[in-house]
Length: 351
Image 1 (tube, rainbow, N blue to C red):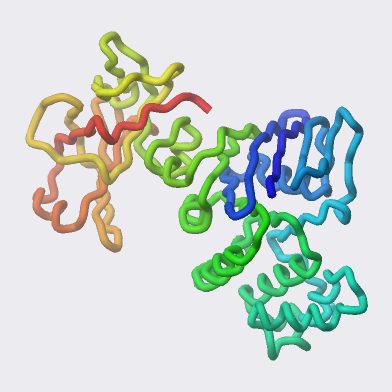
Image 2 (cartoon, one colour; image 1 turned 180 degrees about the horizontal axis):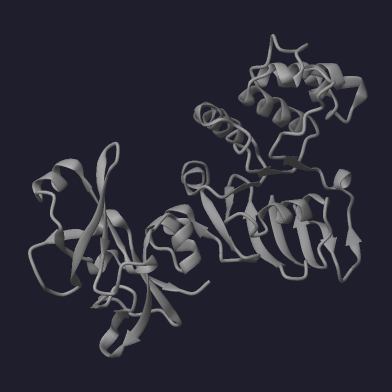
């Protein structure tokens, strides 16, 4: 079962241009900063909002097509949408909330009972949402969605309403439930860690524009664009300018780099993750002197914030992360030469 999306919607200063495809058996992350259009994309797929133009198709059925003037109602699309706050009916019990999603009235009670067993909600049948934990509320919401036999699941930041101490357990429960769902799943989030743990592929949304779908591993190992790199958690990024001989000038760091691989067209930035920086004893290829400005003792590592020959503001700073023993062996230096290994350089285009 395939979900195909190619939609456009103009909000004046903001325009949504989202295009991607996903199949059954894949949990697809839609990753982006707040306000980039993630939730709007889900609402358009569910039929809650209408795109200005474009095409949405699920399992061979057209849900929306502006040219053909097709726009199925949310009820006819059979798409399950899990809202951020779960949207349970506060005046209904667990059993009543789940039963509300069952199409067949004759089998409503039996279906609700079956789903309560499947979602480990037995014993909570007569409780109201306010009497449930965050994880239980999420399971009730998912059970109500599945009671309607959806062909696809849309999960809109499902952990945003949970306290941090609940997220881990709820995440494990959700992962188990998604493993049993046979249709495509879209998982909207601004958390790279949730994408890494729960998704097999990811589409980055940047200021309303979708980037090509890519495997999750590729997002973290070799992001292609500046926005994808920053969303993946890389904090060392510099504006870049191509030089003759395949070299790169890192404008913010004040150095020249030798990547050792062909430069991508439209190169605009270069990056490297903090744990790939290496302390070295002096000058050489891809090396530069830094001044240690601040040392932060993390739980399992030490992070040093450094100024570079390019300066000490914004992208001009570099961040190095070492295990605690390796940092201690350096003797708490104030000046430090570091190497940016060519095999770990990230060559990025704008966007």
